[in-house]
Image (tube, rainbow, N blue to C red; front, side):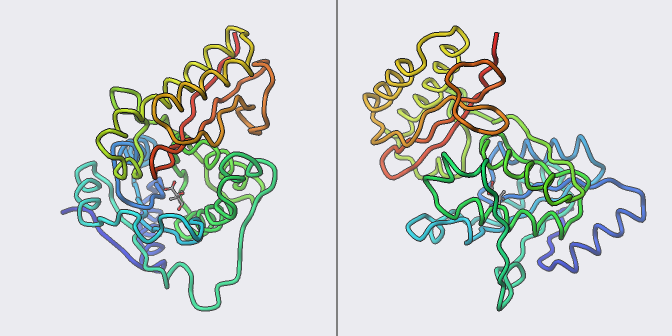
Length: 283
Ligand code: PAF
């Protein structure tokens, strides 16, 4: 296996320093593991843009709420390493908890505005956990570019905002969501879906694409969202946390599609909470 694994920040920095001395550019792909084709597409993007690619695997406790799935989040490093090796990733950084949050760790990075609504409202503390760990990973690796999926659209916009605000010298590259043939966005949490739930799950993609098309056609947005919500509940979803048209950059709600927008949704299917989004492009 060509893929090298390091567990300490010192080893990570030594590897990056050697590449820098050789004049090689570096791309970073932060993940929490349980890798699927979506993650692999990020590594492929890193390999296209940069001479060297680093993937990180760290299941970050700070971004999970007390009643969320931190304990049972899938951990499968051996399998992940095989996938990373096959795609030609150069380095895996998989630190233990103590390397990331040493005794006495006392710092939190948090944003306002872009994180206020949607996932921020549904999952208090989540984005502070993400921002804190992503800041650390970016500063640890000091890569030229870092790659994030559009699947977690609010996370992507928050990371872009944070990097601008804090002058972190890295370019954030957003990469398209990878979907199964029936439209379901790939996610590590899809593994929790039962066979029946898996069949129902693509209704979420149909709902958001329907809302994006209706917004573009200038149809009554409230009525469209109400009908799409009813269709999701009828299909078997237990609850729709939100389904909304928002400004693509600020994520503030939009009443009409008068600028680039995004349709965001989160809905519960059994015990699984799915999120998804698509672009809404004005005529
Ligand atoms: O998107 C994820 O997997 C995580 O939120 C990230 C960016 C790796 C931070 O833990």
